[in-house]
Length: 94
Image 1 (cartoon, rainbow, N blue to C red):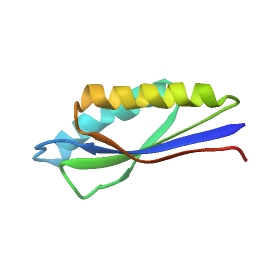
Image 2: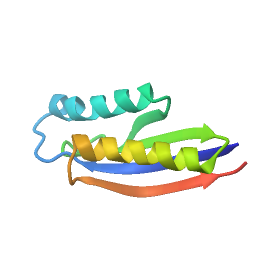
Image 3: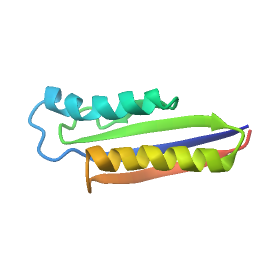
Image 4: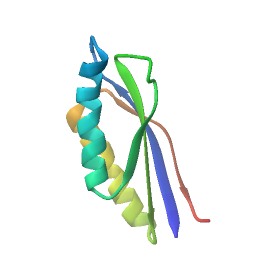
């Protein structure tokens, strides 16, 4: 069993309200969860134009984890083009 996780920073541009911020973050989180991957907003709650999301999954294969996390990163780039940065990531074999 291997646990893979990634912390992703999103620059949301010029969001003017919490409602506008949520409208950009919610689709990312919902789509990642539909992929069977755990995802939540984990930071920058007080900043309107930024957010940090955490993503984690478990698999028996490192290559599956790498592929799935790449899909998550691609999705983030699709929704927030050019404003995505990986803060930290790791693969752990307990």
